[in-house]
Length: 393
Image 1 (cartoon, helix red, strand yellow):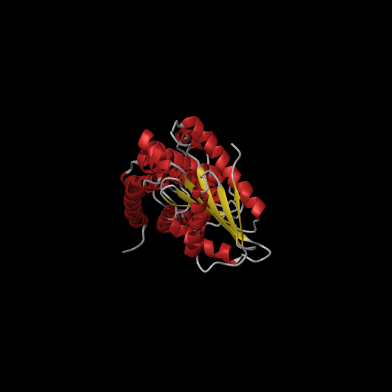
Image 2 (cartoon, rainbow, N blue to C red; image 1 turned 60 degrees about the horizontal axis):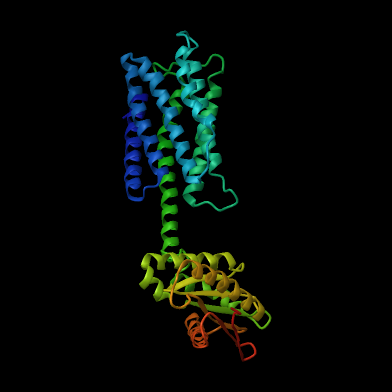
C-alpha cells in the first residue's frame, strides 16, 4: 500500500483513536486529570483527521478549516494535560487560541489562502507544543525517563511545526491544502503519524512512573499520620545509624501517649485519630534536619536523630511534651491527664539492629511511665549513666 495522503490520514486516525482509548482506560484506573486531557487530545486528532478526508469530496470548509482547527484544539488539550501533570498554572492568554482560529474564516478565497491557513495553523500548534515542552523542564528536580522523552518529543514536534510555518512564506513553493499538494504537506503527514506514536508512548510512560512513585510513597507512609511506617523506617535507618561515632552521637526517642485509651473511651475513636494526627504534626514541626520520624503503631511513635547531644534530646522532649499537654488539657476533660512519656537512648556506636535499639528504647519508655508519666527518661550509653527529666507543673 502506497503512503499517499489518504493512507497516511487513515493511519493517523487509527493511531490517534488507539492512543485515546488506551489513555482513557488508564484514566479510569488512576483518575489522573492529565491522562484525561491527553486522551481527549488524541480523540480530537482522530476526529480532525477523519474530517480532513472530506477534502477529496469538495467539503473544504469542514475538511480544511474545521479539521485544522481541531488539530489546534488537540495540542491545546496536550498543553492542559502537561500543565496538570507539572502543576503549572496557565495564564488566560493561552485560551485566546479559540479566538484566533475562527478569525481565519475571514481570509478571502484567493491563491494565498492555503499559505495563510498553513502559516497560522502551524504557528498555533508550534506555540502550544513548545510551551508544553517548556513546562516539562526539570525545575531543579530530576524528571522520569517518560517525562524527559515527552519533553523532547514535544520540543521536536513544535520545532517541526515552526519550520513548517516558515516554509509557507517561501516564494514559489506550491501549497494546496485542498488537494494535499506541496512537499511540506506530504512530510507533515508522515511526521504526524510518527509524532502520534511517540507522544502517546511518552505520555503513558510519564504517568506510569508517577503512579509507581506514588504507590511506593504510600506504601512507606502510615495512612493516618503520613509519617513513615516501621517498614519504611527500617529501610531508611541504616545510613543514619551507620554514621554514628564518638564525635557524632545518635539517639532514638520512643514516644507513647499516656492515658490514650481515655480519649477513645470518652470521646470516640475519631477523636483519638485526630489526636494522633495532631501529635504527628507536632513531631514534624520540631523534627531536626536529617532526623527520621515514624509511627510504629497504635499511639507509639519513634524519632531517630544524628549528631545530637543530651541537651538537644532534652530540649526536643520539652518541645514535644509541652504543646501536647497544653492541647489535651484544653480540649479533653479526662479523669487523668493525657500526656507524653518518652524513652530515649543516646549512643555513640552503631547498634546491632534497629529492632534492638527499639527494645532498649522500650525499656527507657516504661521507666518513664513508672516514674510518673509525662516525662523523658534518657539513657546515655556514651557514658553509661541514666538521667531523667520531669516537667515542672
